[in-house]
Length: 232
Ligand code: FPP
Image (cartoon, rainbow, N blue to C red; front, side, top):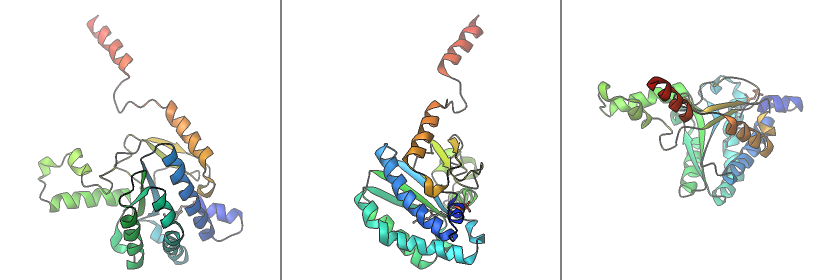
């Protein structure tokens, strides 16, 4: 959800104004995704590195979580959205933790779409915490396979993402779901997050539909050709 700060700056407003509009864009996007059959949506709301931002912006973002709950929790719960939080909850204030726990509990039985909010999250943190928990569980080094480690990742109940969308014009992953995006299709757009809407979403889906996903393999027809040339 990148570009909130620049969106606000263009309007001569403080960065938090952009984040507030970012929450509105998120609520619309959740429904747009659910209407298109998306079962899991993961959003990067606060990274492990975002603590480096000015204290005013960090506390503004924490306050925004609380106000978003007041404003939107009843609506999204009624819309059939299940909310799950991934990230290191330890460093987050008790008030914010309580808000996330309330969101998870209120929406736990919803099935229309699951929205994973990555908050105080980093892809590297996720891999390290997965290893730590596997070791603490007594998993021997010889059994630490990709499948085993996947079962310890923060988002273990979700499939790996098919599509990764980054708004705001930067062309990098910035420590998002490093483990999970190994075979995701990447889509980068200059659109600033508060402007993200159904048109942008459909554009991303249309481009995604043209991608040829091989997961390291070959297309079936290429395999047949290779097979027949081998035989020849
Ligand atoms: C990146 O844009 C955006 C963020 C670091 C925060 C995104 C958070 C929200 C939209 C609110 C989350 C709240 C809930 C309840 C999920 P940026 O600030 O880096 O923008 P810039 O690149 O233009 O500076």
